[in-house]
Length: 111
Length: 115
Image 1 (cartoon, each protein chain N blue to C red):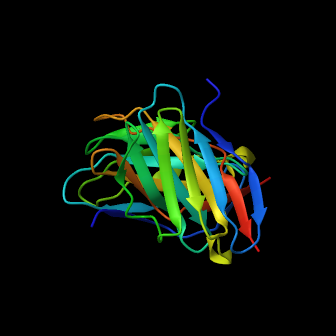
Image 2: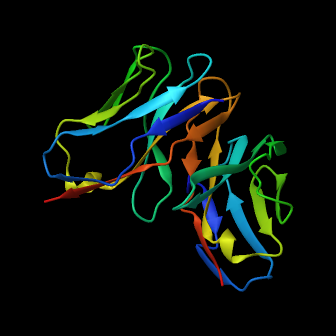
């Protein structure tokens, strides 16, 4: 069935380092793809999305490109900050109005 | 808008007790979701409603769990009787459904501890 697989964490980086969190999807078609972020003690919130192949979602310096050739939607940021420390979830749309979330990747950025 | 509001924020109870979690979605949203988050299993969809009607409850773990949405502004998730393995953070989320709009708005969650 439809699902997403994302790299396991935790990931620890120094401030200003480059970030990549891998995500691949399994689907019969081309579902919309998302990255959600969960800051400590809060609920998830949408970070960015892409609705079709070759689309690039971007927000707050984060980017992810929908690549159908590799069925991937990797999250990247060129220079992370301490405030980016959070858990990041890859997700895909399944059915008419539902999202399937990956297991989450915890990122810790140290000064 | 105040966002999705969940209560209580924390709940500690003893095994066998009934637990009721509450959610008020964002006004105007027509879809509501209940998720459970644990370290072992990550984020799991329990049930979701569209226009107050349960659409998919396949994620509800067993008969001890039940969810209702009596109107567009309120939903409950009930566990009766509760067990220690139900300990988790339970999130409610809402969205304005429809093709192309899958942005979920999450509440801050209810941290449930069953002793």
